[in-house]
Image (cartoon, rainbow, N blue to C red):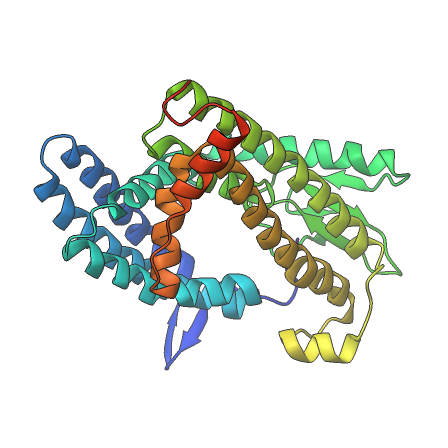
Length: 333
């Protein structure tokens, strides 16, 4: 969306900085360390471990720098809490890896592959524009199917009115005339689903399993996430643009620190309902995917151990389920 009351920089303890700008160099260092450790593991695990450990420390620093962006700028409760939690979890992962938990090399490789998929969309302008405008067109088409046809505009302004907060002059902004003042909903990279797709793709491609089964699982995953994300944008765009979720205005405005009451619909539908629903859907999707690709369990087990400190043996559970059902075991194509 066009964030009419938000800013790019933040002030923390008297220090003013832009979290996204500061995080970018760290992102490249993390990606280099994680991919470097994966390459080193092909020759010597003893070399891979310290490189990966350094990567996890940098990953913790990355989330520490980026946390104010989600908390103070995006005002996202789920993303804010996630980024804060990622700092100690990253450092703990580095500690465990340094002290011999080498299964974390798979998770390290998964994040490296995820970066290879996501970073080009983040840094290559034509690629970024193509996916953003493609998603915009598809969302617009779906809106027409449910009886709405908002104007889609390009540029950084329309009819002499600046589209506040819009970063690129793409044709990616839904323009709702509203009650005297226009409401704009802009599709940005985070709205395309490429982030979630890259996370799952990284995990699927990083595990040790037959390529035929990995590619089959990847195709299903990409399709499911992409379609669900389109419907998510339709619901958010129409609820916000048509002001269909103006509930508890005072409470929502106080909770998220917003001054424009027209943003209440957006924060309810996106920041509360959609983001909470996305977490539930992604957890459920992970569970389903592990039935098709039990090798993913090594990543999920390590993540659960980082969060709970308890060891789990999900791989044995899913392999047993597949054997009992007469379906192919992980050794099959």
